[in-house]
Amino acid sequence: MQAELTFQRSHQFPPQELLARIVSLATEMVDEYHLETSWSDDYKSLKFESTGGMSKGLTGTLQIEPDRVQMVLHLPFALRPMASTIRDEVEQYLDRNVGAQDGRQKS
Image (tube, rainbow, N blue to C red; front, side):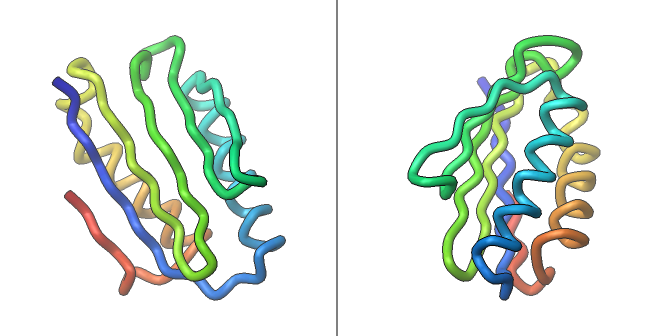
């Protein structure tokens, strides 16, 4: 059974600027978590999966919408003890680079 973490941020960025920020996030995630990524829907949806290291089995999606960004992470059993640390790191990155905390949701 996997733990699921959901993040949502509202934003007011023009589409190209937001995409640049999301690509930057994806690049950091690829390097740090050994991710394989795939974009669909003309760069509006990113799917990712960790294939190695301590984060092996981590999967998720990132959806870009005109006024918000939503990310869902599925943590494998081995990462569940680190869920709160992972949640905090992702929230801090999203707060700094994507949008306001008033759009924040967590589960």
